[in-house]
Length: 197
Image (cartoon, rainbow, N blue to C red; front, side):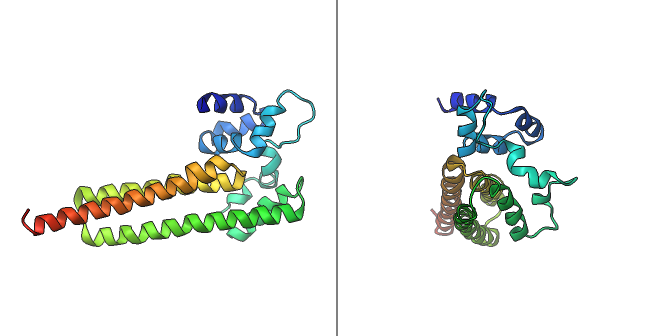
């Protein structure tokens, strides 16, 4: 059912969004499709008057230059957030965009706290473990950093509840718990070997 809904949402994307998806297919497109704007765009598909922006509607500030300014490495995170908020203020009030940005920062802070906790566990594992046990923990940590945090950021930026919570925070929790479990299992195995069992 969920896959069918996603297909319907993606088919409803306007032509300008489909141009963006040529390069940004995957998590970014699904995050937008499941966001408030994506759902409204699906409902309004085929209508002349559209309330929800497509990719270019929000990312126009970035598109004004030769490179995506929001993601330019020379920008600070604060400058990038301000550029993104400028796009939001084209339709939303300053109060609303300020509140949404603050909520996103709180959500990201929680995600970063989970990343730091996992990073500390990996540092311990690197001191205590080797071989397959360490490789397993490193792989779990790589997933947390590369996938779970990315989904959280996409969900926060697109205001996509599925990506903020199920694919973001809950996935971070799951990855963190799997890292803790793998470290605990390895420690118990080492203790059993040391005890001669």
